[in-house]
Each structure stands twice: as C-alpha cells, then as structure tokens.
Length: 281
Length: 161
Image 1: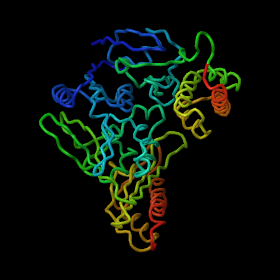
Image 2: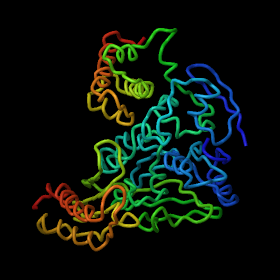
Image 3: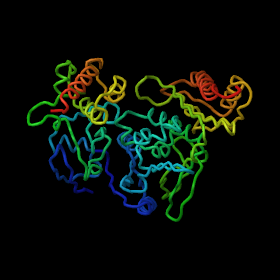
Image 4: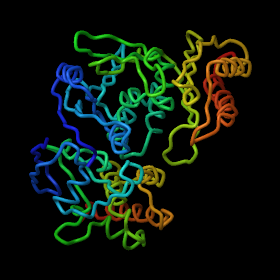
C-alpha cells in the first residue's frame, strides 16, 4: 500500500483545477511513474491524487499546420510512435524513447516529465530548442508559459496553486529543420542522464539552438547562434556558451569534473551532426 | 477511502473494493490470488510485475488498482489456454530461457506485447522490448532465442495456441 491518499478520476480540466486548488496536499496523477515512486519512498505524502487520464482533451496528439499539440495524458510511447513526430522532429522521439523502459513509457507522459522538473528531464532540452509552450489551466483562467520560463529550480516549476498543464504546443517545424538529441548515461539500458543535450538547426533562418540538461539546477537553453562560418568554430562558440551557462555538480551518477569533461564532447558531436550537411559549409 | 472497481482479468470479470493507495500488483497477488505476477523492486525498474493493461505492457507496481477500473488486464495466468501452454511459453521451455523463474512471468508478458504489435520482430526489437525486464540468471541470450523461436513458430502455424 502506498500511504493513505484518496483518488479522484477527474472528468474535466475545471474539476481537476478546482480540486487541486481546494484541497491541501493534492497532486495530479498522469502516468504515475515518478509520483508513485516518490510516494513509496516517502518523499511525498499527498492526501488526494487527481487522475487526469480520463479527460478526453488531454489525450489529444495533434500535429497540424501551424502548431503541434501534445496533450498532458499522452504516454511517451504513443508520442514516439507518431509518424509525423518521428519524421519531422526525430530528436523528440529519441528523447522520449530514452526515458525509462518500454513498460514505463506506456504510462509516463511528456508533460509529466516536465512537471516533475528534474534537471535531467530528457524531454526538456529538445522542447527548449523547439520553442515549446505549455498550456496551463488555473482555477480562474488559462495562461501559456514558454518552456524556457517553466523551470525555476531543482524539482520546481513556476506553476501556482490549482494550475494544471493541459498540453504542450510546438510551432510546426519549419521545412528542413534538423533536430538531434544525445544522452550520456552509465549503462546502455535505461538510466537517467549524466548529461543530455539537444539541438535544432533551421537551414532557412540559419539559426542553431542548443539546450543542455543535467548540468545546472534546471535544463538550460543556450543563446541561439547564427550558423555561419566553419562547423568547428560554431561548435567552439556553443561549448563556450554552455560553459558559461552551466554549473555541474557531483551526484550518484557522475562527478562534476566528469560532467564538465563530457559536455563539450557531446556538444561538438551535436553541432557536427546538425551542421555537417549544410550547403556551403 | 475505498473504491468499488470492476475490471476484466484474464477474461473474467472481477469486482473488488480497494483502498485508493492499493497498487494493481497488490490487487492481483492478494485478493485475486494471482501470484504469478511477481514483486521485485516495486519502483518500475525490474519488470517482474509486468502485466498487460488494455493490451499494453505496464509495471503493475506503478499502477493503482483504482486506475485499472474498467480495464482489461492480462497476467501470466491468462497466457495458457485450457491448461495448454501458449507457443510462447513452450518456446521459453524449449530454449531453456528460465532458470530461477522469478523474471519469467514478466518476461513472457513483455514478449507477448511485442509479438502482438510486431509478429516478426528483429533481435534488436526483442532486446528493446525486454530491456525493462531484469534477469539475473540467464544472461538474456536464451530468452531472446525463445522469443525468436515463438515468433517463427507462430508465423509458421498462422496462429498462437
């Protein structure tokens, strides 16, 4: 038995927000693969668990012309198996598939990965480079939060009382967008990231966006870079930006020294993969 | 507070009164006496409690019993048909894919889910499908061979049984 909480299967976003605002110690349950482990380990003691998986609109996965929408109840496997996602933003599918095991990904959600707000959240770097936004419903109104403003610290987000993330929106990827995700982990099987990096390159705008996870209290989006000049020179610029924007610590997975050593390696590889087929490079 | 739930387990309708914090694993093993589903780590790392929830492989330790209300659950006890082992189970025996046997029910259900979605999987797909099922005895090779053998036999027979 996982403690002593009650359970409600919310039927609407309004109901979920109302319950979350009214009740002390209420939490949202999506996949439960982080929440139930934390409850079991005594790290959280909710009194009420609000299951949002039965809310129809949260199960929507809808890549349309202008904006792609991924509902808060969409499990990672469903996202990663979606053809348009795999073809247009393969890094998002790769990041999703790097989380947990097959069984976990049948439950765990993309939104849950973000709301858990681990510095190592594998979905975060990719979504940062794609300018994703979170749709948030509150007791009174709705708001949209750019993902770069969402994380405020280790396991902390800018959500306030009664706010529920309903979906993630991504601007439809521009023609020819290249995306790459790399994750350094201790073993080949499932593991949390020692360092994770993601990048997107828009060949029309010639902009390169790179984000880094597991190297600071939150995942970090680096200042976008103009992709002109040699690939090696651009990579060194990205490495320099990353070194200024991160502050790795030592933990059970790796030492700060190791993270500082491996980060530039991953970034050079990332930039090379993103830019190597540039015309005129 | 308790909840009245109704679910289908291995084709049978089951009704239960469960506390909100009871896991699906606890429901299966205790009130329902389906002890083929094992508890290993209890935190979704080892896969010993893998069952099919509406056809999808999940770790039953990280699903609340109340979340399974209205769902269809298959456990290892539902794999054999009328006392006749499934092709997949027989393949595990023939390939020597079980040693201590603790991981085997979860392993078979992960393989079942794989064969349901991809009847002729590559070895890479087999490895990915069972990556969430830890085995401390076999070194996995015999298990991969068993799943391969089951896929070949099912393909040859045109059905599983």
